Image (cartoon, rainbow, N blue to C red):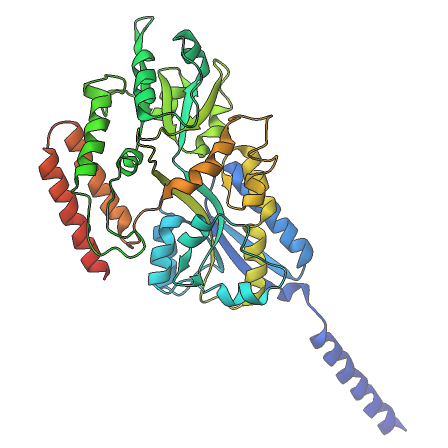
Length: 422
């Protein structure tokens, strides 16, 4: 009898051990890591998105790693070299070329096709295409960011007797406004215009950096169109005297606009949250002006999320990727005025184009601007090329280098990097 009781006791212990080992444990959660950068407001948005994900996946732990924007790419590349990538990575559009080239990110196409509840049809095609190589998609867009916004001080325009500009205005009208808005004001210079990038002028005059942005084979920067664009850009400073020379204003362009030193300022929509704190004057945005022949070309940014090729939790990472780049986050960014949604249904809705309650009131024009955006050439070292080109351009603008010599140098640099990337 004792022997039988002993056997039963042992069997009971075995059953308990098996039951415990098979039971789900809160300490054995699947863990995903998300890396991103952004302002405190963006951190809050990411945290809200992760909360939504955790409510649907309580058995998953998400570690969010916030990395400062400056140095973000270098840190991700370092982690790639150590085979220790985050499962989901935030990225600016220029990063995807290196991520794909170094085999860091997973092809999302099979996951997209297998997910009957998910569709890519709502994205602006151009931003989705930037994350697409061949017919394979390697990232989900979060926003698109044309450098299309001419921020303008309404009070200054009224004082100068000018009507508010329309989105179909031309470079001629723009110069007319800039000259009338440049004046001495209480012993201080009021400039008509300020900007930090000349690419829109290049593109609008028909100039380009390379022959094919998706598959560049040679530089085409040394062209008649580029010369016309640079001459026009320099004329804003030397002939029309409506824009300050580089380095002649001791604060950055955005601050110059906010403090009333500049009437019109070219940038992207991301300036809006800061500009909403302006109380001294009224302001809005208008589309970058067209060439008199009707042409328009716009530099652009944009961002999204990618999945690490090395993730050990592909299905869960896909669910997190959809959540973090999805509608709720895009809505919150739009309401901040920080980013134009990559999803058309949101971009044309009351939270963006039809929003009449928050500045800029004309932000819906960016939906038309997307039709004219031109992304940087697909070179993994384009950031290095861009820096050198801007340094040469600065010397041309300051008349420290002839245009012919400068364009020849630009051409040589671009061709060198194309060859190295091939």
